[in-house]
Image 1 (tube, rainbow, N blue to C red):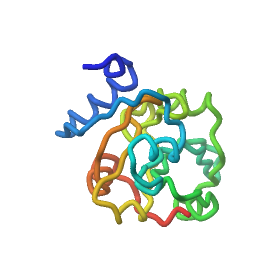
Image 2: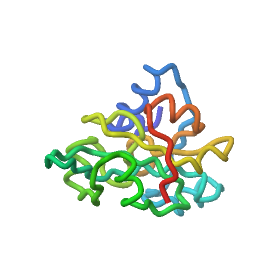
Image 3: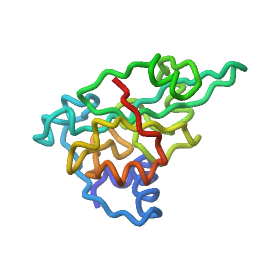
Image 4: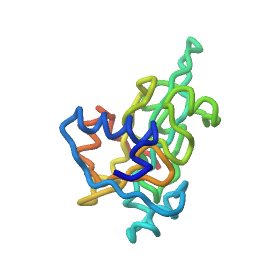
Amino acid sequence: MSSHDEHPGVARVLRALADAGMDPEVRHLPDAVRTAEAAAQALEVTPAEIANSLIFVGTTDSGERRPVLVLASGGHRVDTARVGAALGVRLSRADADFVREHTGFAIGGVAPVGHRTPPIPVIDLALAGFDHIWAAAGHSHAVFRTTYAELLALTGATPLEVA
């Protein structure tokens, strides 16, 4: 067990994965990987094989604000109008405080599971084209290997073209 496994965010992710019956390969990287490009370089894969866990603020017509998790291929920029329309909310960028409050993770380490507040989840259909993908494991130095089907089952996400 590395010191990163003891980090509360990583421990929460590993617990959520174990609860789902998963024991994925987890890599602890020597440097923080806060972007898909940095993660891809460290893992020797393409940025498109990184599942970025992006948090947005989804605002309903009544003004309710909910976290929206978009699991986007690292090669994509999220079209917030498209995703918001599909979900029936207005999507806006979440600031670091909103992300930490609702997920329990810092930006750069947001995982697809283990959030404090269950988000409205969306998964990028482009991720289905890869045998394996990598996602943050609750800390900017930790990632785990998974598949599109596993992420879909873990999160209950709505598959969408997000770019």
